[in-house]
Amino acid sequence: MTWLDDLHGALPASDLPAGARLVLLILVWHANHEDGCNAWPSTSTIARHAGTSRATVFPHLQRLEADGWIERTGTGPRGVVKYAITPPRPVVDSDQSGETTGQRPVSDQSNIWTQPRPLPKNNNNNSSVGT
Image 1 (tube, helix red, strand yellow):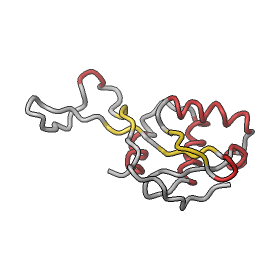
Image 2 (image 1 turned 135 degrees about the horizontal axis):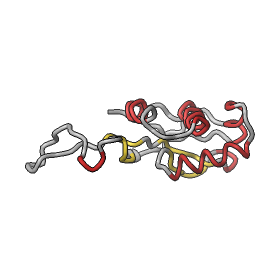
Image 3 (image 1 turned 60 degrees about the horizontal axis):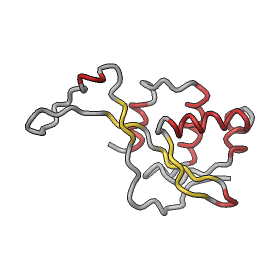
């Protein structure tokens, strides 16, 4: 699965409010589409695309980071925070032999999208668009 597959499966099942979803999708738009890294639009750019204010963007970024949807990975041009998109991955249960059963864990039947996606080893590719 790619990070976009993870996002496609996890986002509809999430409890993120609409504003946070919009901010996340704007970050996705600016991310490197191979690995989900190097998204560095400024908060002004995010606000402009979302049709809102910078003050409204900040709590959504905080929520996305706290819930594991995004991770700060450094800074881009002019000191703008650089993010990686880290959508939760599905949790797959395994039987006693260690084989994957494809079943949801008994402890979490309501939502299988609970594990953050690990960042790729090499995220030095700066091919994203950002302002």
